[in-house]
Length: 529
Image 1 (cartoon, rainbow, N blue to C red):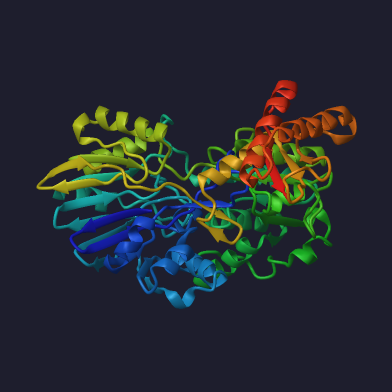
Image 2 (image 1 turned 30 degrees about the horizontal axis):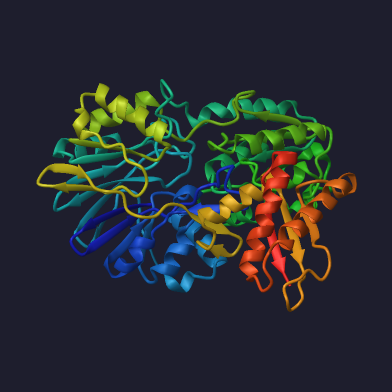
């Protein structure tokens, strides 16, 4: 999510979600921290969504709950994907959706927005030129310069050059592939690989991709038609997106090809292909459940061919590789990058990033959309292209940049960080809770139950309960030692000692014993009754 503010008007761009990192235990998703905006909600004039991928749309239902009735602008396919999310979250009545076409101009407060096509791995993706009283700024959005995209609509070079000729104050450019030399291959380059796999596969084919990657689904449809296979969709989000894309004309499936998943599993394996979700190893997604035998309909079996048509998002590699290994264990043949060319990135590599800079010729350059190492790499490219180092701002989330009278300055970072979504809770899990979960995962916990009479004397020996710490049956002597240690520690307490004093004494005594014997530091929870 990006915010532009001028006087009493705020424009928001995108509302995405991030996959949790490996140390965010129990967290389902991460959304932008826009809490500081809630006091300014009266200033928010509109939200523009650049395209339909999860990292740009996944938090939209949270945003419209907090900013009801704010206009949301999106191209037709992006709007359709938003509607699927908003209906599922039951917040359609809290938002005003406006459809814009690629190339349309929109005025939102003092911001005059000119949209233009930028090729990505999903149709209807846009970049923006935003005319402001402080100057013209350009947002690339997610992009690559694919001259043969699946939908036949490449990036609008003429518009980029026209914007550059006007004098651009600042360029905000996608940095995802800034570490990769050369140019990103065209989406068309995976089609020969798909055809080769479909031609040779003797059994069922399962293609895993992102639920919003409509152009990849179209490529699977095309190769199914070529080799006479029926197609089924697995995954609720994928199914809804496919229906919506068909209705809007962004996905063309020949009559009779699409079959229900329940029917597909009864057909001869060589006659069917399945498109499924789960390329990032998400435990609840179709592919991960298949890999552990927990999907209600699809059981992976020898003879299956599985295509992982996506790159692991940084941080998800371990989960993805675990799923691939489990699929191999079940006898499937698995194709994934770099073993086979079954996916190409939707983001520009270095030569395309250089071309964008040369077309726009901005005064200031701000790399966005990537990890810090990617932003740094993109900044180096900008310096090579002749942009002075003092005109390049590499900033992390929450850091404002102010433009005034043709100058720019970096302001102090705003308070905030990640907002964790855990089950139905949003923002109720803080970093302190994550640290507690890390401690529990690492060393387990010990509960000591202490029962006292009215005078503070022990009624019976303390009771010790452990989970994730030691195996009880093999450690009777150590358990007795813990009971005795707590009893001895409490024996010296004065009659009438407070409950807090009892708890602290028990924790201190157990900590010393446990660490001296095991070199572990489990969480100790005393209960005084």
